[in-house]
Length: 413
Image (cartoon, rainbow, N blue to C red; front, side, top):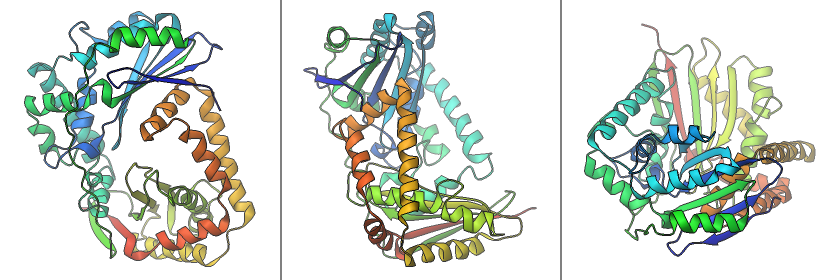
């Protein structure tokens, strides 16, 4: 467990300080509580588009990256369905530069026609290269659309289609900025060779004067309960067939979430997992296979996916996958297998916490879920889950009427 202190400004900005004086570096991580689940159909991809716009210019900063590089810093960002996260690493002695840069773009980003059009071209190119022109690139466009009917998880973060990105108006962009980019919708974590009193002063100086916007955000449609299996066949010029099978699972804060995570690990994480051993190492059907969860704030997906050996169909793959899942449901989970998975989880957590940037991001992420303490509470809770509990949830979740199967079929013209 690593120490942190937390305070709030009058405008609602949550600030977390994690002091670590073992190096002369600081991390400045600003999380906005907005991702693609806050978008509307027809205007999808705006959260990710906005991440690009934030690296343009603001009233007092002509080129964001250049100003940061001048003080020895580097930066990046990512957008997910639930959050948008901006982070910088720089010498701790220059931490005030990070406050200046980040507060300036929160308050007065330059959303000129030129900036919007430049970034529109960049994002459309990214869409084509990563999702349209890559083998299997559009899998999650299909998978999300198949698994979700109403919830905005039904489109990927990049956007549902190119026409949405083409269609954003300056008004759309401005409204998105006003609604989501303000202190009351943000969490700032500063970690490294800093002190609480120093960060309190800097936060007050640079962010204190910025007003929050209590504008009402879109109501997020809740997903109806799935009552029957859904399937979709896609044909594309890919080397071999691929199978993606997803089951509905609880949200991050709900009971059953951690059990679903352990189920995906037991069945499909790493070379010693059940699926790997049965379907890849000792089988002739899958060339690769794995299991994982989407890990989302609202109810998400427990996914098994794999690429077939040449000449094997995705439907044959599903049959083999179902057999292994059926066996898993019919047998006891050994203490040894469960302990091995938990040990792997502990090793990952230990490795993660070595890097300052990971500590900062985790504090921000769990604060956005309600409390930074959840980071440790979740780990404690997970380590106490027994085999019987996992088995109960496996039988509840791994049901065909809760499944969505995407058969990604290879054809050669």
